[in-house]
Length: 133
Image 1 (cartoon, rainbow, N blue to C red):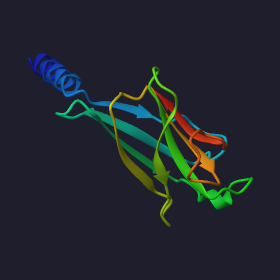
Image 2: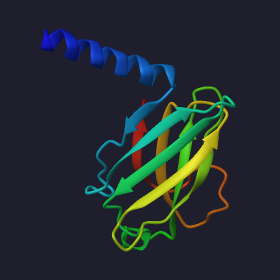
Image 3: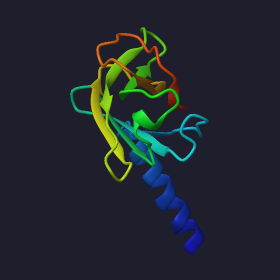
């Protein structure tokens, strides 16, 4: 009886998450910043936009990379349009960083590059972290 109830609860939670349009992507291990870990949560809002919440731990300052860089930029691919910049991510003194962005399309892939210029319109630096849905 308990196992049937557990299965029913798990099924309801799964259906709730799917119906809310929520999904989660996890960053793959990186050779550029091996200690960095994190995830991206995507949720569809009532206006049919996608809220993208990105969180990273153990992200070394970009100045400590080889070669040294000035900043991290976050990008997304949706499979239909060119790569799109979501914003700049700055790690805190505790090596944590986060970013929240909105998109009209759902991301298929989110990645972070180390860059020297925030004005770039296409990634030019090393890919630090990447994830796929």
